[in-house]
Image (cartoon, rainbow, N blue to C red; front, top):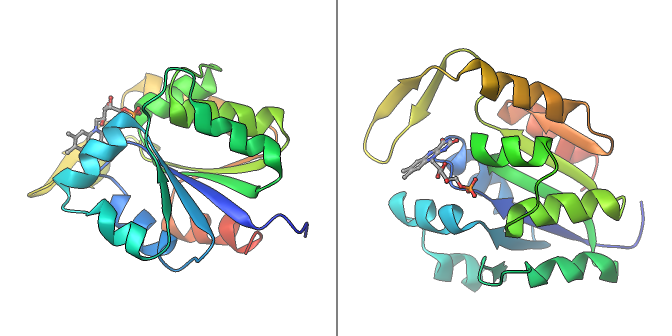
Length: 176
Ligand SMILES: Cc1cc2nc3c(=O)[nH]c(=O)nc-3n(C[C@H](O)[C@H](O)[C@H](O)COP(=O)(O)O)c2cc1C
């Protein structure tokens, strides 16, 4: 294992697997957090307080620059791993097709260009998904396009695309 120590953890605007992602994130002590604009909003919907994360020593980068300036940290040998968890179907689609026009999709694209490993915890991975809306459980039926994008992303080099808490933990264990 290299001596590069930190993990860049990206949160997108997904309620699905948000609680599980944050529970795992809070067990680690070497995480910086990168939020998509929707990620920042959705955290509020689910009553998470960014100040609490900060009080645990987590540095937070919001999506406030056009050029996704924080991605330059990936060039500094600070990060051993980029995690996107949870990952919306929007971000899966953008990443699968090589778009990089916001902070999270830029982190993923630049990680690939820097040969830094990524783990993507995708949400819409099965024909039926039971998800947690802010106030209740909801059953959703991901479309073929969402399932195709998920499959496409799985073929990327240096990327683990996972679809369950267990497979996420398994992928993460190799890096901590
Ligand atoms: C309360 C709430 C929960 C959401 N949960 C999901 C979700 O589980 N999966 C998903 O793909 N999109 C979800 N969305 C929609 C995304 O936030 C939306 O598509 C957003 O544009 C995604 O942007 P991002 O991929 O840049 O984070 C949710 C929206 C809200 C308001």
